[in-house]
Length: 245
Image (tube, rainbow, N blue to C red; front, top):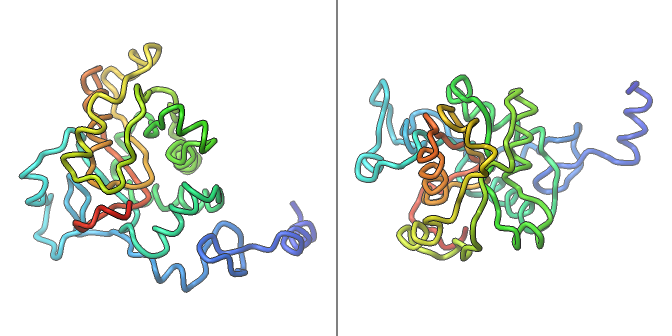
């Protein structure tokens, strides 16, 4: 597209901030105010759970939380804490059907996933149950997986995992209730069993809260022979207040 065509496009469809909707200089981006409101997760963090740590002890670091409850998945990473602009973006994505900012999300997740990508064979988005998919018309995790695929060249397997049964919304549930809610809720499509066996898989989701959903998926994948299962998300809850997810 030429310069004139770009200018005409921006005139009729001006680039807007994916967060607040204010006019900005380029598409698929945020204004300075929204950028500053994102609490990006960077090292030091727990190498297993991906949660931020107050200081860097050096080398590979495993948090007390990971030692107290070793997850079924191998490693988790997230772009930012679930607060401020990131929280607004995810709510708009899930509940307001605002499907903008995908290139930005893909770049963010590529950066956050870091060393996991070199060891990944393919991506699997966390699936929705059919009823919720029908009402929402899209799976936000699958769209995020597609965005990451564009950035990395890794293939996605959006139909590999199936949610067997409807589960309650995780909103307001305790960590133990969340684990029970998704226990046994996932199965692997028969035609994907051979590709999963011996594979290193990266799950993709919008938010990691307690990790219960990722654990349920990882448990099923490892039972089917997956070698390693990691997870990348756009955001992560890093405090004890789980009632707003």
